[in-house]
Structure formats: C-alpha cells, structure tokens
Length: 466
Length: 56
Image 1 (cartoon, chains in turn green, cyan):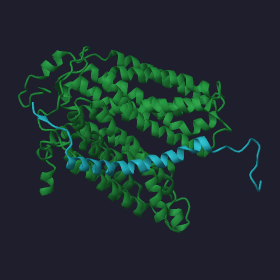
Image 2: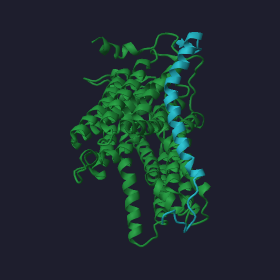
Image 3: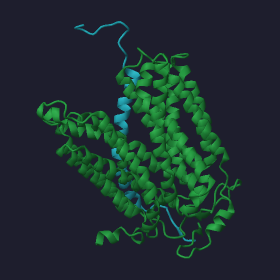
Image 4: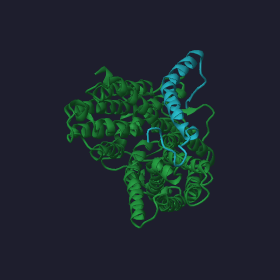
C-alpha cells in the first residue's frame, strides 16, 4: 500500500530546488529499457532450435515465420496501449505509468521464459508480445509530457533525449542477450530460459530506477528567466486542448500523415539495408560489412533523434519536417544512382542512407514537441499516444510495400541488384505526400479551443491556460 | 509564477553526475559495441573475385 501511494501523482511533484536535469536520465532509463524490442531478432534463431538442441528431434521446433509474430504483436500492442492509456497517464501521472510499464515489460520476459520452458508459443506471444507490448506503449509515452513541462524552453531537445534512448535500446539489448545466451548455453540447451529470466529482472530494475527518479514540476513552474515567446506564425499555442477535441481537428490527422509517411519511408530502408547494400555493391560488400552497415544506420537513427529535435527548437517543427521530406526525397531518388544504376560510390551510398535514417529517427523525436506547439503542453502524452497509431500502420505498410514492389520487379525479370530502385523511388513519392501534409498544417483555429472550453454536464473543463 | 532555481548546488551536482552515469554507462557500452561492429564496413575486404578458399 505504501508503494502504491508512492506512485501517486501528488507524491511525484518535485520539491523546490529540484534540478530538472535529473529528469532526462529517468526518461532514458525507461526508453533504453523498452528500446530492447528492436533487438528481439537475436532470440529468433535460438528459439527455432530449442527442441533439436535438447533432444536432437527435428520438425518440432518453432519456425522463423511463427516467431516473427512475437515482434509484430509487441509493436501492435505498443500502438494500442499508447492510444488507450494516454488519457489514463495524464490523470494518474508519469510515475504510476512508468511503474506499470516496468512491471509489464519485465514481466513479459518472465512469461516468455515460461513459454520457452514449456515450449508453448502462445505463452511467448502473450508474454513478450501482449504484456511486453503494453509495457512498451506505456513506457514510450510516459516521460514525454513530463519532459516537455520541465523543458518548456527546449521541448524538442528534451523529448529527443528520451526518444534517443528508444533508438539506442537495441544497442544494449542485442549484445547483452548474446553474451547471456553464450554464458547459459550448454550441450542440450540454447540458454534461452535463463537469459529471458535474467533480462526480465535487469530491465525491471533499470526501469524502476526511472520510476524512483521521475518528478513532475510544481503547478505553474517555469525555468528561471523564462518568458514565453509569441510565435509570429501562431504555430505555438499557449493554451491546452483535451485529447478528444484535438483528435477531431484536421491538424491532428495531417500530423498523423506526416508521421506515417516519414516512418514508412524509413522502415523501407531499415528493413532491406543488409541485402540491399550487398546486392547493389556485389563483390565489394561482405555479409559482415553489411551487418556493420546496419549497425551504422542504428547509430545515425539514434543520433538523429537528439540532433534534429534539438534543431527544431531553433528553426521550428514545420521547417524541420520540411527538411526531412525535401532532403529525404532527394536522397531516396539519388540512392539508386550511387549503386548499380550509376557511379557505384559506396561512401556516398552509406552517407545518404545514414542521412535518411537520421531523419527517420528525428521524425519520431520531433513529433511530441510539434504536438505540444499545436495543442498545448497539458495533454501531450494522451494526444501522442493516439498519434502513435500512425507508427503501427507504418510498421505494417513499410515492409509490406517494400516486399511487394520488389517481388513484382523480380517477377518481371528485373535484375536483383536493380530491383531496389523502384522501391526507393516509391519511398521518395511517399515523402512528397508527407511534405504536402506538413505544408498544410496550420495553427489550430481559436474557436476549437473556445468550443472545447464549454463545460459539459458530466465532464470537466476541457481547456486551461498553459 | 514560481521560479525554481535550476542552478546545481555541490550536493545536487554530485547526484546529477551519479544519476547520469547510471544511464550513460550501459548506453556507452551499447554504442561502443555497435561502433566495433560497424567498423567491418570500412575494414573488411571481400575476397577477390574468382578466388577460392583453401580446401576448394
């Protein structure tokens, strides 16, 4: 009971003199933890060899296709839980949400370990997929609103710092899992059960560090010397809109398209990075070098989250996304000509791919600050949660689009090394759609704020001064 | 409006360093692992075309 009261929103309010720079590590602890999901693929091969390793019996192991669903379920539940629990998070505060995120994500590993031990795939789906996915969604959105409130002078930089952690989580998760499996593996075991159990405990403890550290600013707190700057374009509101009216605005759906196109295009290259570089530079890039290329892209994906979101604090969110779409489309169109279609310049290919991935990460990290500018700081987590459904759609659309186009190309007799060109051109087209959607974003009309201010019979006042 | 100072005192500065180290150490380890892996892109030379490995 004492622990539960510690999780209350009122108990998380910072005492006077609290240093706001203690909040980003709390957010990072959560995001570095849940970012492990991108390293799930390190488990798939060992998971497909459990029975054959233990008994030598073939044909009873899970297939790679069956195991791919674990990741897909987790990402789907990330989007669903972020959309469903966003409003609950605004009511109950970040500490409680982060606690449940730690329980779900850590617990997901434990349940998955049970599934592996019993060799029941549906238990793994429920554990890592459903339970872990709920932890992902809750954890992803929980520190964002708090960071924006602490860093109202630099919201892009602050959220970029946290979301950078999500990009970097796989860099810890993959080598950690590999090292643990190597330590626990025996002649008749791939060491998965022990690895999942240990990782569940490690991630729970690491995320709990964030739970204990997180503090919300006292009501009305502003950084010393801070004065709100009126935006000449009116793109930054000083009011707050509730999630319901916000989701009904045209601006919300334009931002949904902005995020969806940016993510779809990025996933397009991430998904195919390793085979693409090997086939476009046949004889010059080995499998090990291609793995290095994927690692390099992950680094730029992570760094771009911090860099671009920080840049957006100075040049504005709309201008930042305009750069993503214009520069991204140009890079995608140029990419095939650096390979088989043109000059075969590996350094230029790697540089352009890294730039694209930095903007893919930047798109994720800049969107919360964009939402804050458009709809106010009060309900960013809830609105952000609803917007993340764009990610779920992109997660399905991106790989499906890439695979379908490539299959059609190959069936028409296009050489394998040239089959990527059409994919890259389509991605450039998607970015053009995003560019137009971003161009159409205008300040939310004042009457939307005014209409939302009218108290309803059983509801609360929907708008308040920020 | 209440203005809370964010200027670190001596004690809060040491807390800040410890707290940042707790997240920076695993993050730094992960990044260094990835950089080591990425070096293969610039260092590993593919076998010359037509060359067979010993035993073939």
